[in-house]
Length: 289
Image 1 (cartoon, one colour):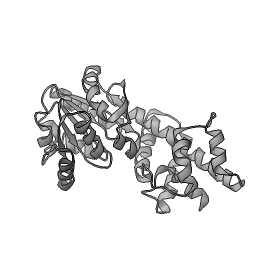
Image 2 (spheres, helix red, strand yellow):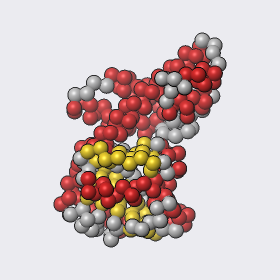
Image 3 (cartoon, helix red, strand yellow):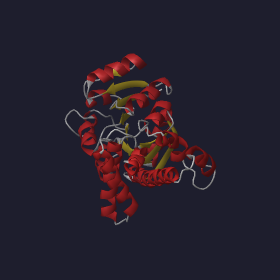
Image 4 (cartoon, helix red, strand yellow):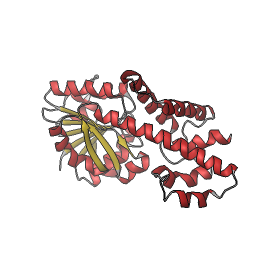
């Protein structure tokens, strides 16, 4: 059992912190900007709450965070009453936020100056993956800190990998989003084409999903897409945030991402339709409007 803090109890962080307590058996203290959410979590799982990130991080072996963006991460780490004010030497901060690779390197350096460690560890698997404890976790940081943290992270993950130095986890998550964007657009166009051609989409998917066209998106989203239901996971607003990070990094490193840039614009069309909170499979909706 380790002493653990978890900062940020959104749709991802709430169940992840729960798995650290219930499945991992760790001593967990939580902080959330809305204190009522932290109290709700503590009542459900039996952990403790703290009034600030610094309060949550004090005397902990591991400090986890899952917040909104780069600025949120800076706030809960190096900001006023941030976790780094009280983190002990040798402790490890694991950041599950999807953020830029550049911002990951800032707290890495700040933690090192205190004799602590920082791992950027964005996740894939969405709300369902968090609730079921089967997330994929892509890590950047030092091997020693990763080896120390991996058994704790595994409380909410089915795959945990060290991808390279600080920032490498975030870069890997960017690749993950690039691939998802292209796959979902292809699936949307395939279903749209099949409908226009008068085919039975269920029969089509039953056959092609067993061949080279098969994917997680096809297996898990084709039914709801075919029914025009888009309330099953990662929201369009979040995807656009992620793709903005991807495209900014591509401008920095010179990568050419024409399909990703186009799909990002398509998600903008979905937002214009009022689909900000629809899941990412809603790309089909813009083809059928």
